[in-house]
Length: 427
Image (cartoon, rainbow, N blue to C red):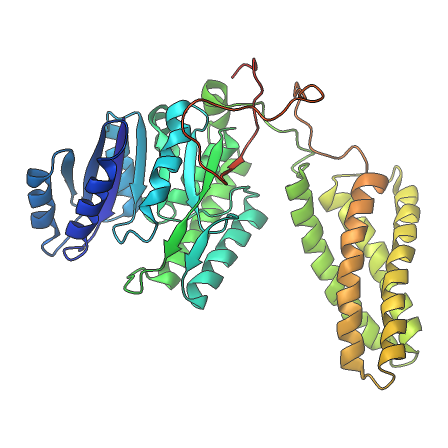
């Protein structure tokens, strides 16, 4: 029922302890499983170690490939496996094996289509250096900003997928290397499949030989290629959605995101530009005016530009119709923002009369960010209502209905991305 793949390249030292520990752990599972060692053209004694493990341990096999690439290895083994659920994990066992059963339980029960271990989900416990922490978070922020994904951790080496889903998605995945995980998850999400996230305990391997710079460059190329393929409609995602998806394609407004996450991403981008412009204008206007007047003028100029940009980019409103009304409403929102920033400036001068320009600018920038949050909520609910995400045919649970449950083991603290289903709904 379960095939756990361990892709390796020159791992003669770690392979034996990893497979033996994993084999002992799987012996306690209430269903049959197998371990597949996927050798990526190793040049050391890894093939010999793999052969010995396959001969000594029941339910362990070894597959040798003459070309490197983790994605290539996973795609080959998963495509030819006869198991119901396909998983993989890194040979260093950085992820605690206690999360393996929760990872595959939802797939075996049919509750989920893909499951990923997440180091960034609530409830996870991670031990790693600052460099890898920053790189990981920046990469996932980049994915949210460019491909508008909803899952939290793309590259944790701890994932599983149903075999029927893999048969549909794997032919569409092109990357043979480290971007394989991201590409598979993006295609699954765009096809309307349910991705379940399992919080994991994860300890960084200090001996990791991953080239961070080379991997980052390859990932950027992968993001550009995948984004282009999705934008041009080159991928037959609708066919996958029709066969496996749990809901219709979300409505979009001329390429403008209509979900909260999508609109928030665009709004944050516009807000960052507005904040930078505000800071520059404040310093410029303060040369010939006082702090309060400079603050008012800088806010006024950026407010007009901000409303215009959000009208077009964030909420997808085109043409001149309603533009004057939107600007008028935007100015009212601006007055509220001005009140927040003016109040912060007044409080600063009352508490620290001798504060310099740097302190003033820092306080005003922080207050402006708070005003920006308020601005987004008002723009979305008052100025541009009706530009929210809507799924045709979606139904709501009756009043008083609680959360639905599925048979089979579940993981405490797990989160699921993708549309939910209610009892009696058709797939």
